[in-house]
Image (cartoon, rainbow, N blue to C red; front, side, top):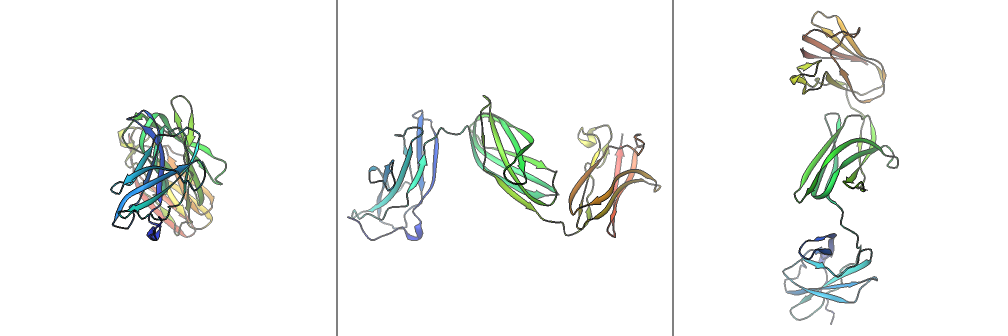
Length: 308
């Protein structure tokens, strides 16, 4: 008969249901996980299942020491409802847990554990982690400003087939102020694909003007070892108020070598690249140079070293 003990603070809720490849039996299965019931005198958990809500059919008794159950008796495409009770040593039965609804689908080729975005050094860094991968060609990184229309901004190769976790990251430097949305298009080797969940991040207006140190530094205009094989150097800066901004390269004698920016800018985060050439398109000589940013009664300078 039903007893009066309940799931205290709703602690007994199915907290995760996953579809996965059950390798031992080479079949599809549904695995249920739950929290231990807070009562100490639990003998077993009763698992109930049906294709309609509030199932009354008990399909298994799970020892109190366990908090998971694997259901192999499923049909792909079918909808199933599950709920659980706890039974104590006197055969008192608790209330039912909440219903959990799951549609049995084929397992995804890639188990994506997490996907997040973080604003770091004037870039948005996307980080995602996979638990396992099966025939994973890679990830197309997509971006949107309205969460509806997405465009491709990059691609990260996958790890093929692997049972080990893998971590990935992608830097988006094309940003200003506002809200951005991202998703991953995971592409399989056979051309099929699936989308991740959509994540968002909002970039607020900078509170100050600032010119960052160029990177790499020293650098080469020919893409030598000092610049990691990429010619030139990147200069990042941020603007707190709208106004005319200039970013200019000078030599040690104070002569203008290259004017990189000379226009009105909205508040936000920017970057510009100097390829080591002067205003006439000629290669500047190796040596020390200075980058100066001015605007809105602000001025800041950084020392740069150009090698050959």
